[in-house]
Length: 111
Image (cartoon, rainbow, N blue to C red; front, side, top):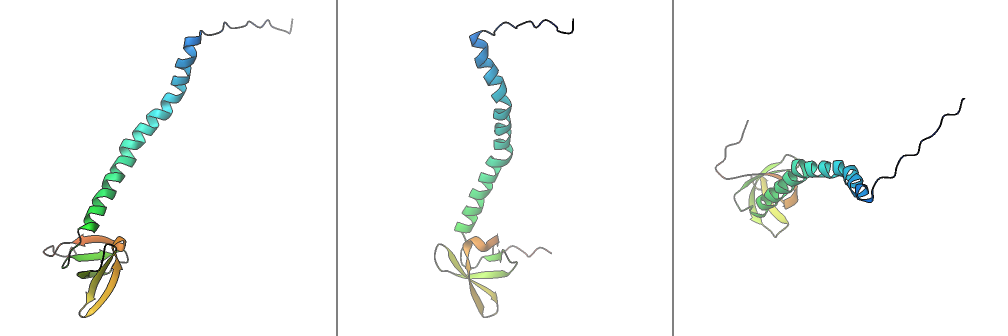
């Protein structure tokens, strides 16, 4: 009277098991695809653009370092270092990766 009868369910066919696994993995695949197009791909493009800008720094360009110092490139020492004049007669060496912005010669300072 207090015990109900349990009915066994029929086993699913073998082909339905593959579809069940696909349906459980599908949301993760969709999340990955969305993250790739919204986050990873634009970030890679931005990194390539920054690397190209840093590679093309020439003498005479005005640069802004990560610390906010604005100076004019007087000499390209090697692939990793620049010599920057930050004031009249004051030159310092800066690592290329520390440059946050490159302003071309004719670009006015934004205020």
